[in-house]
Structure formats: C-alpha cells, structure tokens
Length: 466
Image 1 (cartoon, rainbow, N blue to C red):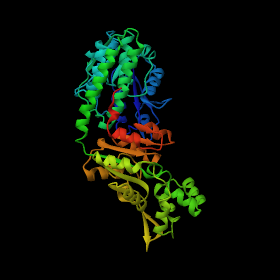
Image 2: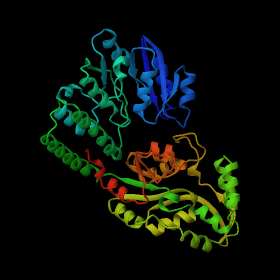
Image 3: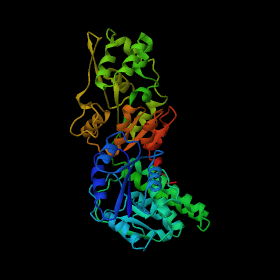
Image 4: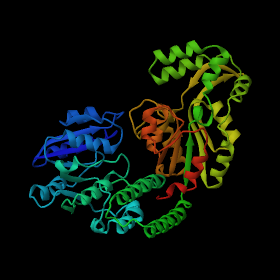
C-alpha cells in the first residue's frame, strides 16, 4: 500500500483537488497533508476531504517532507505538490508501480514542460561535473517522487530549494535503484526572475556540498574553475534579459523606509499612547481599527503633523538607493496602512513614483478625525486571499496600471500587514522584521537597517550560483 504525502503552505485554492485525486488512486491507503502553519483554510479544507493532518515541526518544505515520512504507515511513500491542479490521471500509479513491482527503490517524475532555467543553467552543468551518472534525469529538481520509507528515513532532508536535488543525490550515494518516469503534462508555475538567484544558489550549494562530503567525488580546483565559468555565463545571460523587463519595487513605510512608526510617534508626542494601545488590543476588525485610530488625530493641523513626521529618520542611504533603482529602470513606490499625506511626503522626499495610504480627512488644513480607506485596498473578485483589507489588492492594481507582471515586482516590509504582499510579489523581502512568519515567507531577509543589500539584489549579484 501507498502513503501519499502533500507538504502545504497556503494552498486553499487547490488542496481539495489534490487530496481527492490522491484518495481515488489504487493502492493508496493514506493521504497525509503536512502543513507548514498555513494562514488560510488549507488545513480545514484538507481535513474535510479526508486527509490526515500533520503540522510540521519546523518551518520549511524539507522538514515537512521528513515529518511526513516518519509519520507514514506504509513502506512506499509518494510526494505530491499541493498547488498543482489537475494532475495527470496516472501520476501516482506511474510513480509507485516500479517500486511495487520490485524494479527500483526510488522514482522521480518528469513531465511535459521544458526544464526550468535553474535546471538547465545550474543543476545539469554541476551534475555533469560531480555526478555525471545523474545527467540521465531530465528534470532532477522535480518534487513529485516516490520511494521506500526504509531508505527515505536515512536521508537528511534540506529545508531550502536544494531538497529535491539532495534527495536524488543521496539515493544515488546509497546505491538505491532509481528511475525517472514521464507522468504527462503539468501546469507548473515558473519561478519569477528575482527568485532564480535564491533557488540557483541553494541548488548549487546542495550539489557541491554533497560532492565535497563524498569521498569518491573528484572535487578539485579544476572543477571549481568550471563552476566559476558557469556562474559567469549564467549572470551574463540573466543580465541581458533582466534589463528588458518592466519592473517595480514596492516599500512598506513604517519601520521600513522610516526608522519608526508615524502613529506611534504621534501617540508619544500628543500623549494618547494609552488610547492607541486599547484600540489595538480590543479591536480586531482592521476597518474599525483604522477609523478609531484616525479620531486620535482630530484637531491636529497638517503643518504640525508634517513637522513631526520629519523628526522620524529615514533608513540611512535610502535616497541614494532609490535614485540608483530608478536609474536601473525600476518603478518605485510606497503601499502603507498609514495616511496618504504621510506617504506622499515621503514619496516626494525620496523622488519615488507613487504612494498609497489611507486618506485622512482635513478641513481648512485641520484633521477632522475621519478617514477613508481607498477602495483598491478592499477585497475584490481578483483578490488572492479572503482578507477584508489587504495591501496586496493595491499592489495588483498598481502593477496593472504600469503593465508590470507580479513576477517582476519586489515587495519589502516588516509586519504581518505586509505578509501577503511579500508572498505574492516575485521577490518578497522581510526588512528588520521581528515576526517569525514574515521572515519565513520572505525570499530574502535583511536584518540590518540598510538597503545596500537591496541594491545588490536589484543589480543581479543575487544571481550568483555559488
């Protein structure tokens, strides 16, 4: 019998179909969804459709896969991705049958789609150097696999993009019998340009570390020289393509561009810290919170508020970074849950292209205590989640305005209010964030209050493969 393991992270749109598909397949007696602390309805939907739910012990796909293997009751386990719909009808049969028949111990899938850029530019060249026997696998990074539990429990699953190539190499080093099977056509999401660097680096690190730790591998300076040449050619290729892209960088404002929060500075200056704390602790509806907080500014004139804003320091060097990004062809802007008069002032100070914030009402330059939440922040038929208000809705509207694909957008923020924006952008960056989930979901973490690393990313040094 077969245990099907599905690692998930916010897959509410597709998980029902994947679980139903797995449960209908012959010889499948167990479907395990190993959830990585999803923030949507993935767990409840999977449970409703009959999956066994296991919460991953540690954040990361590799840990989820290992937890699933240890939890599985059957000796043959198959892994499916939770975001693919539909799967070719015979996927599980094709993966598991060679193991059920005693032909092999490990099966990797290939499918009718051109191999990805990281596969062709990084994985295959490095495999040809260090593990030439594995070049027979057309798609070595495929995540749809099957294997014997008795072997998989002996493997150290990586927690990054290197997990799938790591499994293949480990099985090879264990002298497991392996084969690749064609499972048909799959509509698989390509990684955005900005994510290629992270994926390339982690895949390359996995292959090289496996080679270096394997006593029989010919790991020499000659091979390292070849790696340097691969890296150089990859960067040239990507750079030429990257310059042609329409691209955007979107910043949160409070605790991202600014070294502080505007409303917190107001609370301290105007002595309403207690009232602000009560609103945040007692209210949960974001609309009500926004409207109640705005009342605390009633009677304050625009001049004093802007003067107070200017006492909050910008992250050092931000103006120079924005200038360089614009010179590289980036559209730059701010999406904040603060106020538009604040975001506009910062936008103008930095020479950015746009800003979005809540519209605090003024009468004769004095705040009335009323606020209007822009319509494009609200949930709509195109929204990627069920939240009543989300910055991602505004992000999508801005991308459409500038005719930019979201894969070519970088989003930077620090809090849970930025989480979905960070997840949906082509590259999400957590900036000096203290939130574990924000850091986990981000593609890149910047821990110091400086955007110098952002410049490195935007200028493509991120695309180094070693």
